[in-house]
Structures are given as structure tokens and as C-alpha cells.
Amino acid sequence: MGEYLKKCVRCGQCRYVCPVLEVAGKESASPRGKVFLAGLLQRGEVKPGPQADRILSLCLTCGACAAECPSGLPVDTIIKSARNLSASVHPHSPHRIMQRSLFSKLRTLEKFPGFMPLLRYAMAREYGLKPGSPARSVLPVITSPKRRKPRIRVGYFLGCATNYILPGIARSVVGVLTHLGCEVVIPPTSHCCGIPLVTAGEAEAAARLLEINRRSFKSFKLDAVVTDCSSCSFHLTDVGLYSVNSQPVYEFSEFLVSALNPDKPHGPLSGAAVACHSPCHFRHGRKLSRQIRQIIDIIPGIKVVDIPGGNSCCGGGGTFSLTHRSLSDDILQRYTGRIKSAGIQKLVTVCPSCIMQISRGLRSQEIPVCHPAEMLHASYRLPG
Ligand code: SF4
Ligand code: SF4
Image 1: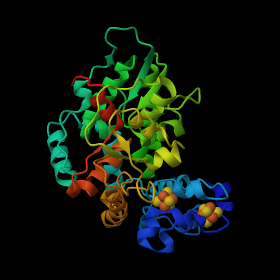
Image 2: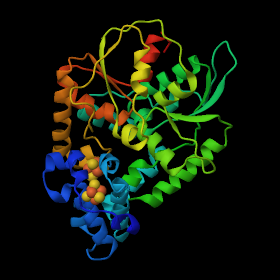
Image 3: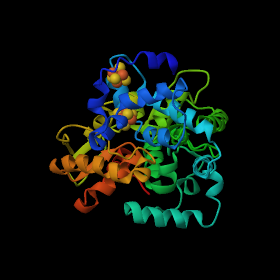
Image 4: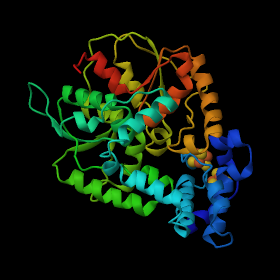
């Protein structure tokens, strides 16, 4: 981190793209301010503590600042490292223990009888969603294509939000991939990808999950690993789910475009005007751009409409929408205002967390937000 910090020339270019600064309006919330604080913490000129934690928490880790920085500073990574430094000083605070336990032990917690009812209650209250049974409990470990030999064997990294909250996405991903000739494997011992822990400054706990995930996927002979979540794709590609080569963990639309060349579905869908939302970890993290649109473009009857002013951060940022609700709502409302003005009937995106957050903002407009796998599943007229 030290070498990078020396490269900040305080030009302030990162300030123009930061969604948190736009609504918070103070320098300490700016990327430049947080880089400055990271330097003070690293040199021991400021003590880690609640005040530093509070300032460092004012970040969605969207990566827009890093994409803009002329000195090439990985600003979001610097902020995560500073959070880690700060967290290491008080690792046993109740808040930290709770956070660590939740994301490290989700697979254990899910076995408690009250887990799903509590989650359903919270999701209905917060997002108006009614999650059914977790995807893992209804999908087989291995699904093979019907009536033909598999052309490729794919590991499906099933993220937490999809598994517990939006399991319909997982059914669609498996349905579409097998329809296109893939054998789909969901390793039963895989866990959370670890990104919520990294953004919370819990790098060690995240590294333990990475090892579990590496072992889980290594135990199957796979040609590629695919996920429906752009944040999981970004994180697992960044830290290397594969310890021995630099193959990416493909985001779903990226995989379809680059590896499968999907055939045109037959079924026209109603709800003709659709806009595509490119999540931050898709654009800035994985540096992907047109893949969602390329997939939606093959569906008959769909007209893709641009969002006026282009794509923006939705303000979700994992737990940011819970810990900084008012700032998150301000960011969300600015964005959904533009989405509404596009006159669309549906929004499509590749991040379950964005789906939840933007659905919250578009609830009153009755504009559904969905995953491209769900649209393809419907257009291919697949069962289930
Ligand atoms: S754009 Fe980069 S160099 Fe300029 S202030 Fe921000 S972090 Fe520093
Ligand atoms: S990662 Fe995003 S939210 Fe965080 S400082 Fe950079 S631009 Fe702002």
C-alpha cells in the first residue's frame, strides 16, 4: 500500500466520479480524502479507531475512482487495505465478530430452523421479495444436457444472494447453460466468495473462504467456472479462484458471449422496452461492457433502451445500503429517477445485489429488475 500512496498527486480527478462524495459533499468522503487517511494510518500518524472506521466506511468499493485516477492508484483496494489495518487493531469487537461469523459461517447458519423464516421476513420488509427454498436445496450437484453429449463442463459459482434470496436466477442459469450444451456442476461445499469480508476489512477470514472454495472446485474436473454475480466474478478473478492459472471466473453474460455463442431464442417476450444496468464490478472491476446488451439483443421482441445519462452506481455496495441507508437512498433515487425517465418496462442486470437495491428504488413504478438468465430462460421456453 505504501508505494501506491506515494503516487497520489492530489489532483482530485477521482472526486468527479465518486457517488458517495456526490451525495455526502465533504472532502473526507472523497476518494482523495480516504487515500490521504490511509496514508496517515499506514505511517502511524493517525491511530485506528472509530473515527477512522467511520470515514473509511464511506465507500461503496465501486472502483470508479480507480478507473479515473491518472496515477493508476487502485483506490478501492487502498481503502479496503486501510479498513483491514484499522480492523486488525480491534478484531474482537462485537460488531466485527458478528460480521465475520455471518459471512464465514453462512453454510452452518442455514441449517438452523429459524434462518430462512428470518431471512424471508427481512427481505419482504426491506425489498418486497419473497425468497423460496435456497437454490442449493433444489438444484442437483450435476445437471447434464438432455438428449446430447455435453460440449463443455462448467462449474457454477452460486453466490449467497442468489442462493438464499433470488433462487430463481440459479434455476435459470442452470436451465440456460444446459440448454446450450453445458454440463453444470455446483460444488456442494463451496461458500461465500468472500467479497463482503474483504470490503469489511476482514482479509484473513476471506482468505480462509478462498481456500475452501479452491478445494471445492478443484475436486471436479471443470473446463470453466461461471457465476451469475458480477461481484463474485470480480472478486474471484481478482484473488484467483484458480491458484495456478489466470483464467477468469466468468460472469454469466461474458461466458455466453465469449464461449457459447448462444442460438437465437424463439419466444418473443412481452415488456418490449428494456434497459441494461452494468454493475460497478462488471464495468470497473472486470472491465466488461457490452456483454449484457449483446445477450438481450438476441431475444426477439425486445428493444434495448439507453438509460439517460448512462450507467451509474446504484448505491447498494453490499452492506453499505444497510449501514448508510440515507446516503444509499440518495444515490439510488438519483439513479432510479433517470431509469424511470427512460420509459422502460424492465431493467436487466447481472448482480443480485443490484437487483435487490434497484428493485427497492423502482418498486412504486412497478418496473421489474431481472437477470439476463431469467429472460433467456423465458425466451427459450425452458421448463421450471
Ligand atoms: S485521482 Fe488518483 S492521484 Fe488524483 S487525487 Fe485521486 S487518487 Fe490521488
Ligand atoms: S470506490 Fe467508489 S465509493 Fe469508494 S471512494 Fe472510489 S468512487 Fe467513491
